[in-house]
Length: 189
Image (spheres, rainbow, N blue to C red):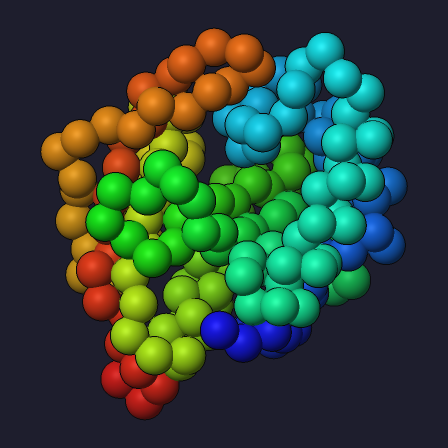
């Protein structure tokens, strides 16, 4: 395990370790998403104040990122916040070492941002040694499914023929799952 690091991408995109300085940007972007935010952040509890939950989330991910236990980045283009991307160890993993999650704010969607961020994160985690990554998406999230399918195709993954239970806003929703079984070491991509 290694500490989280910033990742420089092309076209003015940077992935910066998530921390409390992004709180206002995240909350503003969440407001644009309405209830769809629960697909991206299933850990949110609908009955609790969102701001407190985001503050707790950012405190936790900053600590976990420094320890190499979980990696959460703010996606920024030309210094503007456009989303989040994360790699987590979760108890629900079927076959992978990491779970990949991503969310792009409404006004930045349909521009390939999630795909570029996914490729950057998979390249970064793969440089740390052989590893595998799972992606799970609510099948009703068509854009999320297409993004996952594209990433799996680019990184030689495959669909898992099992679904995963995910609690969303107090309800259990079955998610489709994919696996990228062996990320390349540096120099192989």
